[in-house]
Length: 248
Image (cartoon, rainbow, N blue to C red; front, side):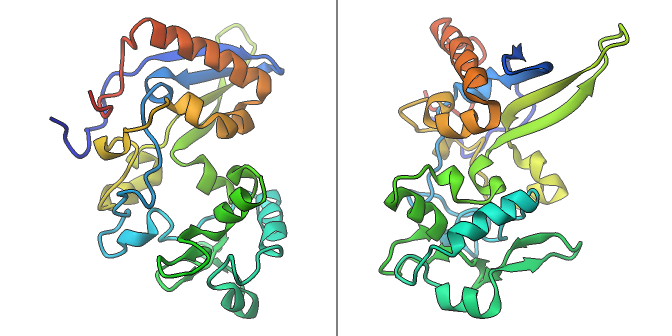
């Protein structure tokens, strides 16, 4: 028997190793999360983060840009979208596809109750993110066309400066699960959330395999290759600290 969502605070297993491409960085990776069977179930049972918007998944609030480069990259693909791919194409080009939040931060515009790139179920061009669909249709990886926050979720990369006590320092780069807490105080208000929900832990492949492209983008080719070795050893050992949301 499974439960809808497991409580946070469960034991996790981590591994640390030097970034092969940068001697000033050390990766700290959550093996419990990365070997879990989570997968995005958008369009396959995802009820959305808000009960009043079940069809828009986690696209309800729009997406903030991580920096100017992130915005510029997405803007280049927005120019390539045509009305057969993007339901709100005309609105986006007429009134703009970005907006500022209450703090002045740039994000994708919310229109009709979701991110302006969200295509409704009735749209002939296909349901879901227009930028994601464009990537699949043109042979690109979706993480190359979407805002950073969209393709990283629910992976989370964080940086922390560490002083080991000998007068030196290094940057710890943690790779783990973007839990409810990662959303800040508003995370507790979400009606549904996937990362610790048993309904989303149904993948045939573990996260480190299914999200190869995203993890490679976050860690680099060499960093990802070493991560795979550690994950495979963890799995071979029987996953001694498994994610409790994985269905048995």
